[in-house]
Length: 485
Image (cartoon, rainbow, N blue to C red; front, top):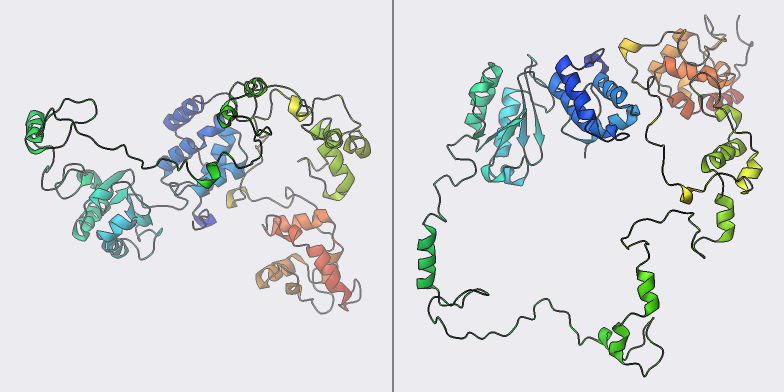
């Protein structure tokens, strides 16, 4: 599958909101799902947004994520995975989807695509100059017997010729698409043969009489004798097709095998009978056996989990996770709680939790329900856009304090830092950044400010600009304060 990305920022609208009618429909659709499972409505809501605007915008994805209290990335995954969602603007009067799968290809789909290139645009997913028409090639549209075919919005047009498709496109372009009748375009009724029925054309009684007259075979199982030779016994050996070979070497009862009775005098047929112990075990609910679930710790069965493993996993798992983070992750790398501070940490020491001495809460196997049904707050989970551009005052992080009005001596070649090209170097120079030593002495918060200023979405942090600048500074003669004032 090709990579699917959202449309360019220049064509994205500033916002999205369902119409009053669609908003009421969306709320009713969400209520169809059980409590805690409303996120299942993500596909219907995205489709409704596409029906309203013609395509799925970034603002619509944000709006649906807010309505369903879903993380934005989850809605984005759905929109970019399913090709039914149009991520770029389409023709306002017609978006032609040409089936290019084998049956349609063999029946002239290439000619239909040539018509679209001629009448609409030479490339897929591009609109004509007026913005009224667009086209794309798609997979099977489900009417192979009526190939070739296209779909315009929600209607299919089948049994097409290039000339007929040109006529249909012209009608849609003129705003007269409602004059085109969907379905076969050659007079065929649905998927029936174009020349009329060739089978099952007679009366049922006539077919039975014809069968009795022409057939000399025996009747079907349970049926009365009929046709020639009626009443005569017909003998046929039973079919052995598909039966296992019971005389194979592997089925020889004299071969020793795991689980075979140790007493050689035991009758082979007796091994097919289950003992009372096996029968009792088989009626206990377990993996592969119906009968419900058994609540309790995962080590409830003796020997199920080694004692030394169970001891390390006892206690609250979330507490163990937090303690592990405290033990191995530096303070400056801890996650931000959204207000500039660090999330509250638990008071238990890492040693106590990780060695299994922290107890009091049930283990994972003793849990009978879960409260993990919502993803948490998502009110700030949105795309960056021109309409929501941050200001220096609201930009996350701290603005660097070492910005210069002009370079101190010769400028350093900032393009030596991975991730900085000529355009980014020019923007950094405009901001007052000319030397490696400026970047090398930044704090993490200052790098985050620069990253947001460049709209890099964390790239500067991931590529370690500070560390790269320090390494380059070590081999550079331009040190703080050594250049011209």
